[in-house]
View 1: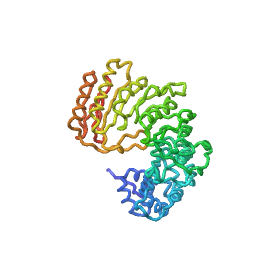
View 2: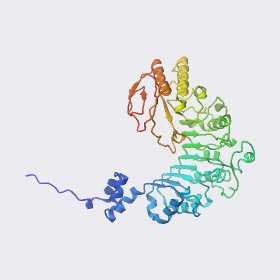
View 3: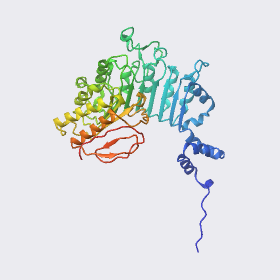
Amino acid sequence: MFSATPTGSWSSLPVEMKLNIVDHLDLADVRTFAKVNRESYCLSVPALFHTVHIASAEALHQYSAAVPKPYLRHIRQLTICTKRATPGSSHIRVSDALADVLPYCTQLERLTLSLAASLARAVIPCFEQLHSLDSLCIDHCGDEARSPLSERLVVSIAASVPNLRQLSLDRITRSAIHAPDLLGARPFVPVVKGDEDIPDHAVLGHELRLPALLRLPTLKKLRIRDTHLGDPHWETMPVCCALEVLDLGSCYHESNDYNRVCNERIMGNIGHTVDECALNTALTSQTFAHAKHPERPLTKLRKIHLTPLFPVENVVDTLTTLSDSPVESLSVQCHEDDVVDMCSALEDFLSLRAERGEHGFYQHLHEISVSTVSDLADALDIGVGARVPAAQDALSGEGADAVRRLKEYCRDLRLQGAADTGAAAKETTDVVKPVPAPVQARQAVRAANQA
């Protein structure tokens, strides 16, 4: 005779199993579950505080005052913006609020700071306690002329994080201490004065300039955008890290040629370990003339990303410069108005590849993707601080014709394709095997060597 064995109740489950169950709930369900009773609330705290977004200086002040400090140890991802929600509101001591929150975030893994103004130096020691922090993004969202964010402060903060692997910086301002040549000189690049009070770092000492980031031994991914990279120390700074991902932007105050030289100088010094890079400016053979390491720069480069700021007229020349690298993947982003010109440039590149023979010129290349962006904020960020691109409408008119011609040209070059129609707003050809359409809807072309 069959006899059913009664199943255990929720109360009989071990705490570890209950926490695991809560971890698998959606956030909305966690919030509902937290209201059941006191035990449910305590079990929900780790999930509720796993990812925290603080949207303003006022919210930060309220958060530091209202949230119990023991709860902060559950935060794994933290995003803080220090812009005022209400302009002209009463003075808020942002640095004090940060110093009241960060030391208790002992399990914090990813931190994004969108700073409207600089911080007091008293905040710097707080980062020394963040041993689990792996990724740090610092973005200046304020007025660079009125409230600049000093490179000395940012470098000191980054160097204070014990195990930092990923660093992303946006709109960081050069210090007059390290860039006196920029003071009062054209093109009048903003420079910070009065940051002498930033104390010397235990390892970096007084040299808290941007190139000193290369002395951080744990750093693997570095992204710097909208920042002046003209410090000559980029070329001579001893490199203590093995960077795998490099994403260098440009300074809008300077010319394209100036920004190109800055990028080439940096890549010449650290490019021998780089596996993946994003380019905003063209590159020439001078990149290799700046080499300081015995190993030739970019010999390990497998992935290249061309951002919407990359000049279309330099696509072929730059890719030719990098032809000795074992590149496997090339991704290109451009504005919709540039799709025709970009597809034409890629056709020229593929034609050159066919003329030189695919076994000697980009012989490892197996994928080319082209996608459009409606705004620079949608542009691809590799490695650090990657944003999900906004969904795009399907291409039409000349843009769609250019995409179709590029696909046909790939087939003419004996590139085997398989159409993947996925989402309605997506047009994709994958030449190795069919690949499921990504979540984002975007226009794309993918081309690869014949299997």
